[in-house]
Length: 223
Image (cartoon, rainbow, N blue to C red):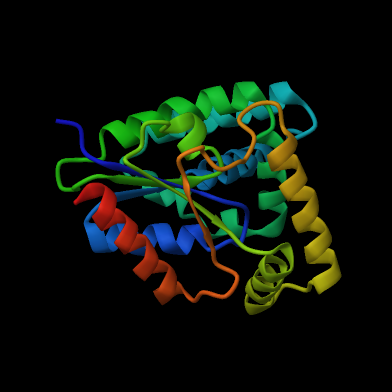
């Protein structure tokens, strides 16, 4: 019998990742940050001296990552690399995510994760930008986490400053708007809520309140 799947989507710095990890811990579900796949692909792209402006280079980078995943005994080490959180990696990840062939290369891994979370897990939670619409359209629960662009820019600025990285609010806000536009306007798997997704605005909610809301929806949907 298939195990339940929860899809969590939303733009950058909306709080979806924090929520997904917390919810997975509470429910005993396996968790996959699908954005890490794109960031890891961008990491491979840069390390190989390739360009995010070239679709073939982007596909090559994604294929390099998948081969590494297939040959690795610890996939988490590949996807939890601290370097993946660097701003430059995030920008390149957003750019290569617009290529349909890159998404095809990475989609199979995501779908297989949702179907096979592992014997020790009660289900799977995936977060990203197209989980509820493309990767897991039949997910048992779909959440779309959002927040105002200004709030998200403030969160990202604090994150960058906490890492000792120089940044200004205006620059972060500009980058955020550009990234949102790329994610929402791309032809392949644009970022948008699934028709049956529950939308949560995190602008005025802390992590605890977010988790409380999500657990309530999970109880309703999953029992």
